[in-house]
Image (cartoon, rainbow, N blue to C red; front, side, top):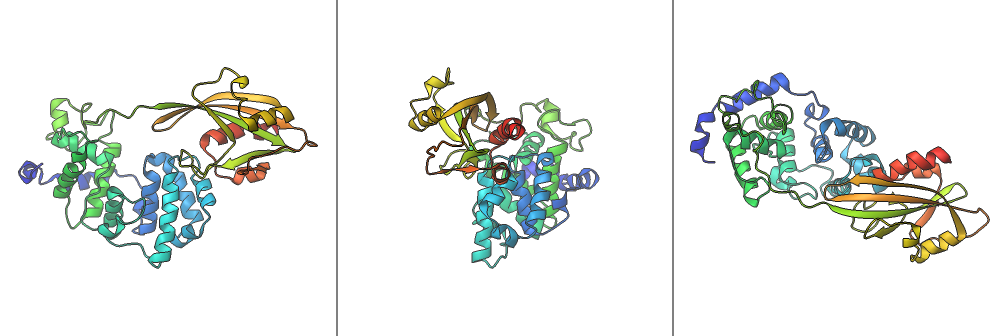
Length: 362
């Protein structure tokens, strides 16, 4: 999009900011220029809607009011507070970055876009958001909402999943950005996409740009922005064995680089397809030992859990051991009582099972 193409939209920024002052939501991270709290909100809101992310933001600010508080926290505490938001690498990267800033930069957040980009877990959008919202640096923050608004209003046909899109959309947003009010403009662009120019059923009749919007004039709202095909979703079959002894359950921390790293679950046997019955899984020697020493008292599932690129089918077998019998546990597993389990960081899938079964029966 050239400067000539933007020439007819010289009042775009003025109209957008006017709309923002009338219609924006009163969100707590918009009432501060503290880079820590702005960063916290941006990390939480990645892949998360505001209505879902708000309680997490408020809990994090209460638990860790400063960057130093977050840096001093144990990772398990951070993951426990994050539980339910998904994409747990966000929480781990956030925690590691907080420690890095405290240890290597004296607890002082970088004050420029270029320096923010050097931090782990901070990409171009997040760096631009922090730089503009906290320091009013004149750099455009371009997220999915901004892609959608620009594609529709200006008729940009570039596939937003392509490598060329980021450069093209950022350049266009940068041309429109008023250098003296970058913070408000970026907030307005994001908010406009979130509540006015929504993915489905945008409010075109009351849009301040409907007289110039390409998508509205050409009936292309459903087609724009252009987005390539999503990655294929992979099915996984997880078979969990919940070993109970003396009112405690055996659990382990997931340490491999897979989903839910750093979270706690039960002994797992993954199968290529849904097993017909328990006999399909007893070739596992640990499981065979447990079945010999204990009794399956309850089964549950399948639970279906959707991730971005995976569809998980999970079954649970509750094996109760006699108090007087000794059993072997893998080195990475330990027994935990109900209070201890409550404090462990757990995937939503595991927490749902525990809530519906364990806590109601123990």
